[in-house]
Length: 302
Image 1: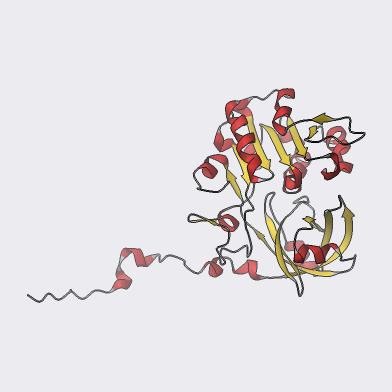
Image 2 (image 1 turned 90 degrees about the horizontal axis):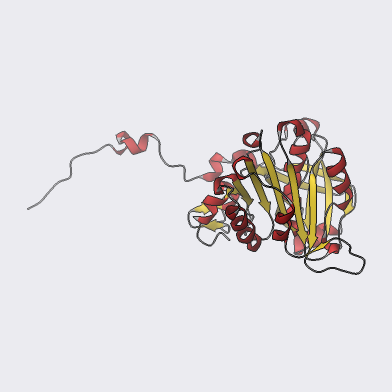
């Protein structure tokens, strides 16, 4: 018996009234724009990390460019490619953008050879951010390992510029050895000027080191944590997240009050290349900032 399907106008179906947006570029069109920049200053932090001050050349574009702590930009070295870099400067600074870059590949190696006056390009800002306003009235615990202090620097600026809005602010920072510590010239300012408690530790002490030696979780023994009134931000290598966040969970801090930054395998920053995809989640678009509860539900995220 033959059966003929009734005539249908698919455009009148409920699910077509709000069709899915498969074209991510249509949503993120503004992030295609390249801001032409100039290197105005270079600070050598370690043999492998440098801090670049970038000034957007167009006055109008420089005034309208804004970002939130935790976001990143795609940094283009003309002729050599582009790389995702977390913004390390204050979100209130409209004069220049600070990017901490580790020498780790072709593009970053070329960038480390650049001098003041070199022209670069940036796209963005991209991604989610730390919910700093939500943390107002609470204690903030900022935990960084190695290069993780670079993305953590923006929320540190936020906390210092809005210091009266927060209770106790602690920075716990650990590296492999003293020679890998970043932004050492700011430690005294954070403590004396901004009244932020800073604790540092290294895994391997070098000659002349008089500070703490051990794992970053050892620093938790030196501070009092009120779990019901504390937010935590953790940045560093993914292997560190589990140890630190599990320790914080054991201290009673809820997982939805812990935030981490995942910059895993990011390449295009717009969810088009799929290199950073974890399940159905794009690290560059849906992140890089996630609460730890969400991270535990992302298979192979860490």
